[in-house]
Image (cartoon, rainbow, N blue to C red; front, side):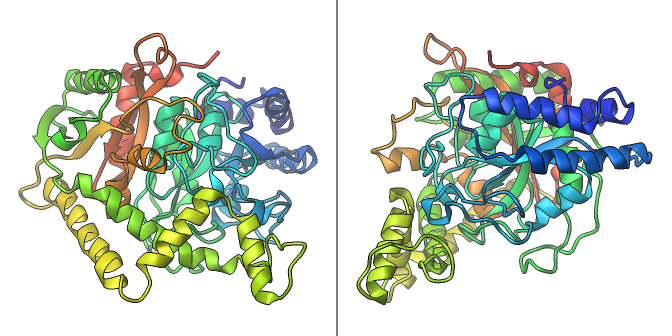
Amino acid sequence: MHKLTLKELSAQLQARKISATELATLFLDRIDASDLNAFLHVDRELTLAQAKVADSRLSANDAGQLIGVPIAHKDIFVTRGWRTTAGSRMLDNYVSPFDATVVEQFNAAGMVTLGKLNCDEFAMGSGNENSYFGPTLNPWDKRAVPGGSSGGSAAAVAARLAPAATATDTGGSIRQPASLCGVTGIKPTYGSVSRYGMIAFASSLDQGGPIAKTAEDCGLLLNAMTGFDERDSTSLQRPKEDFTRSLNDSLQGLRIGVPKEFFGAGLAADVEAAVRAALSEFEKLGAQLVEISLPKTELSIPVYYVIAPAEASSNLSRFDGVRYGHRAADYGNLDDMYRKSRAEGFGEEVKRRILVGSYVLSHGYYDAYYLQAQKIRRLIAQDFQNALAGANRQCDVIMGPVSPTVAWDLGDKTNDPVANYLADIFTLSTSLAGLPGMSIPCGFGQGEKNGKRPVGLQIIGNYFDEARLLNVAHQFQQATDWHLREPA
């Protein structure tokens, strides 16, 4: 039962072949037996209480497609009852008095919460090694990272500890862990999913999205989690849509843009081989490959690592040991309490980004760094519009690798922050432009070390083109079985 897709589980529940309580118990038992450190907080009593309510709705013939289906939430979404730590000592043992909008939406849809998932501290990282509670292990190879910051979400779905999970993407943190763990994940257009109750890292970049086994499952989850929220000033006022409406459309004549900048130096040969093979499969499905250029791609790393830390330094200033969060036990005065509380509560990577952000926002450097980065951000977005929009658009979607390598070994990049930053080279530009993007499994690394480490294919579309992306991914998954492969 744990191997079924979200849609298949829904059919089993609606046909009364299994109850929501039985299904939740099955997954809770699998979580208890796991050694991946994917979950930070599980409360069997709370989960089974939700499952009982779902069973009541099913007994009343409520036909909601997600009723009774289990889901787990990245520990960046606040939840009533379960702890919300953001992977940080700063929020160790914090329990929110309210639910994030995303959590509210899934509760209303009848889904059953399994618990909270491990993540890089305040969503800052590419390998899930920055969590105060220890790293999550990649279920394909426990020597490897699962990717970050949503490593717990991707690992849980890959290991069949949950059929679906919420995640967040600031610079690639849905797509990159989905790629490294061999599952499907989508980051929708910025503003499509409410950020209310999502602990902020970089407010102009953070975006929630789902991770699941298939593109179809991700579409069903997006149907529930998108929509306008007046409590979020960045939420977009758009009518609700069915993201699964185009899943079975033909790909005949689809133009796929292949950026030459995504296939240069630094891309591992095994990753390129898997991605090229996937592109060939799309040609068999009737699509046409078109070489395009996104010339500002290499600038996305310096731009992101100016803008994101600047926003982080502002957002994290609220964690001062006074209102909530960790407070030092021993201090001399108020200033001393601030210093010690923040020094003890934040990890090294978070401190690094706060310092960088404070520097680029400081007097004399704001114009030179932050404003310049925002100008280049606009140019990066324009590169995508030149390819995807207008009368002279070159392609319908863009494809390429998600990560330049397969998952690396735990500890390999711990002492080299820049190496970690470079791992996001192919995902950052999409986030800076606010475009939707997704990752689908397309193969494995080659060789003795990388033979069981997945490779993801990235699919990028124009604004609000999620239904097309899901269609493209679904057709590929109908023709291949990479998304059905499971770790031992």
